[in-house]
Image 1 (cartoon, rainbow, N blue to C red):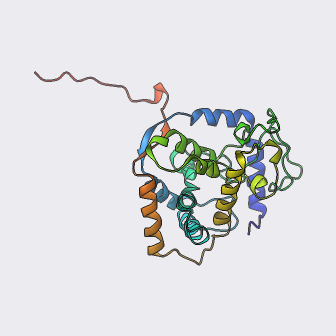
Image 2 (image 1 turned 90 degrees about the vertical axis):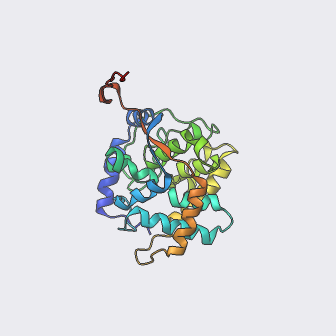
Image 3 (image 1 turned 135 degrees about the vertical axis):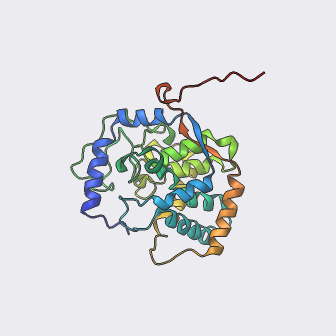
Length: 264
């Protein structure tokens, strides 16, 4: 698994160049207030039909296929944790940044890293790479204090956070999604000095989610209709209402309001 090649090398070189502190701050601000484009989570999962991750060497199928494979594995491995099963289905939904907003690949996918910290040797193609200068998280300050490179994880976390009154997914699962691409942390033991005790649960959930994510990819193993029906029912129960996905456009991009005088 994760047998990176030349195309992935070029991708990560662009990622390390592009993920500056200024860029990450700007993206967080851009998506920090979501007020537009109501859409159900089920529809968001379906939109992954048009997304193939250019950074992933393990599958060439659309991300919607991988979403159901991950949910199926999670059901088998963690049959009593239905919320983790929902997480496995939706964990890559943030990749709609491609579809809705036309973000470049290096601002959507790929392994994430913490700005201000030395790039871990376990990061893909880390040798010789320079990363952004940024304030370093204080030891024991907690993972929430860290500035993580921007991508689909952070975007979906913001969607879940800002729509928290419209869904039933508990907060600890939002954090598992937020850090599921932070491989140096949950797979290689990096960044532990930043953690506080409350982060242990997040690390455990992110590790479990990663097991369902990474080891479920099989281009020759389609998910049955029964498995799909099961997880779609869970999804509908957890996300019964449409969520807001897009920031308010700047005033110059909003259509002019035209008033019509009512007939008497």
